[in-house]
Image (cartoon, rainbow, N blue to C red; front, top):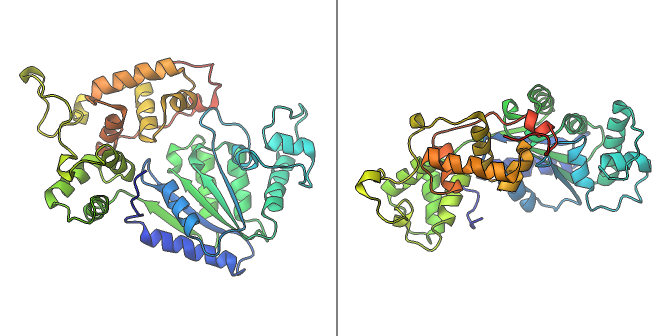
Length: 358
C-alpha cells in the first residue's frame, strides 16, 4: 500500500473519532455504533484501520474479526477474535468456548442456539472487561448467520463500554441478504449511530492523491481526468495503478507498457480492456471477477467459491481473454471502470470447498 493519506475521508475519520469520545467519556449505557458501507475497493477497511490508529486515548481492548474466505461456519467473527488468545482463564464453560472458538476438539453435543448466543455475548463482555474497547467487524456481508445475530446483540448490550465499528457491502451482496438487512437495520437504529457510505473519489481528490505521490507537483488536469476515468475513482484501483508506476514519471501512468502491436491487433489509443458491450461472461466468470476486484488471490477465490485453484486459473485466463486485459489487476480495473458487479456466491460459500467445481 502506498503512503497516501485518507484523501476524501477526513470528515469520516473525524466523525469516528467523536464516536470513540462518547465511549471514553462514559456517556453511553450501550455501545456506540458506526456502520461504514460501500462497494469493493472503496477503502472501508482502510478507513476503519486509520480511525483505530488515530483514536485518543488508545483503546484498552481491540477485538477484531472477519468472515473466513472459505465456507462460513457458526460464529466466525468470534472465532477470529479468540484465535491465538489464552482462553483458559475465562470464566465460561470450556465446551462452549470450544464451540465458539471452532476448536477441532469441540464436543459433539451442542448447546441450544439461544444458549450459545448468550454465551457468545458473555464471552465478548468478559474480554472487554471495563474497557473502553473497540469491536471491529470486517465484511459483515460475508458473515454467517450466528455471527450476524451476535453483532446485533452486541450493538444493544447494556453496560458494554465499546465502540462497534462495522464495515460492509450493501445487504444485497451478502451471504445471507435478508438477515444482513435486518441486522443492518438494527445497527442503524441505535441511538447516535454513525452511518457512512463511501463512494468513489472525485477528480479533485484523485488530483490530491497524485500530488502526494509525486512529491507535491501539481497534477496535469488532463492526466487527472484520464486517471479518474480509468479507475472510476475507486481507491483500490487507483492504488494498484500507482503501485505499478511508483518510480515512473506521472505522464506514464496510462502509457502502453507492451511492444507496439501489429496493425491487425492494434489497441485503442488509451490502452486497456475492451468495452463492456463486447464482453459476455458466464456466471462463474462474473463471480471470479468480483473476487479479483476484492483483491483475492487465486487460492482465496478457490476457497470462497468452493472450486479448485486450477479451475480458478482457467476462469482468470478466460477473463483476461474476454476483457482484453493483460493482467488480473487490469481486469479488476476494467470491472471498476465499467461499474461491473456480480452477485456474490451464496451457494458456493456455504458448501465445502471440495464439493463443487465449475
